Image 1: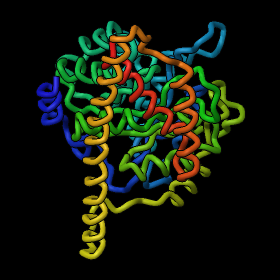
Image 2: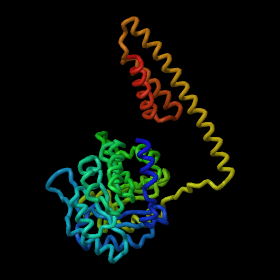
Image 3: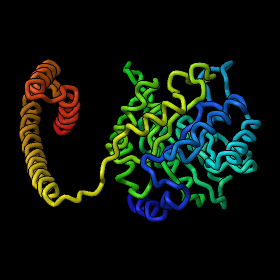
Image 4: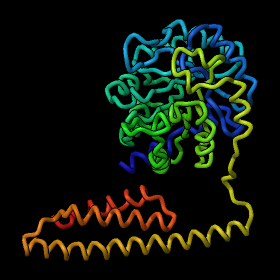
Length: 362
């Protein structure tokens, strides 16, 4: 698999070959849904004033969780996107969830397609889309699947790549969770970071609107994305968001977007100062030393675990002793708090260690 991903990474087109992105962050913006020609054109005109906005987005077909809700205007909205392109020169993009959607978009000269989270999760639908795109030179953006599974995200990208699509990018929009939290979708930044590690040349875009689910979270999430080196943003923007027919709470006005983009801080990826470089090298060396010690400590711990496992077998003692484990975990989390560590992070680490320890004793 790794060799296939290396080949994919080598052949993905640089984003500068299909999108003007001189100003960071480069932004895809527009309403969650195209609702009327006036709403679409008014929003696009306002967005065209920003040097950051390169692409106008609008949902034409809306996959809704429940029936009898607004599911998009359909084909007529594609004419409105053509009008946006003619008047503002912004590129246009919309979500496709079937081969028929793709065909209609190609007929109406939509510039960029995106595959939504509910489609990425379904390899059958992704393959249908890939099949109809064979021989077509068009950029395709792939949102992460609804559930936190990197394999499905990679699989969708690979299917499109096998169809000959080279202008590819991934959109991080967070993951659904049953756990109640302030955000609509859990960011789980480690998954897009791992995607970038596996396919370094793949452009990565953050969708703070869907991660946050509420407009007050858009700016801090956008800043986090920039701090992680993600240079592209997809932000839902509506001329009158409070009256939007879908996802009104997570949309902002073009004026608010433009002001926010001016406040975002861009990190310098290159370290020019020799003194700073030296400091970074020293600190990284210290971290590498600690990492090596952690690995050695884990190896030593597992040796003792195996000895305990043998003793349990000799004396017919169950491998899992839940009371002792709960007491240990409680002690570890308390110690973590004393040392200024995130107790939930420490809990997660020791749960993994404990699972491996149980496995070693079976």
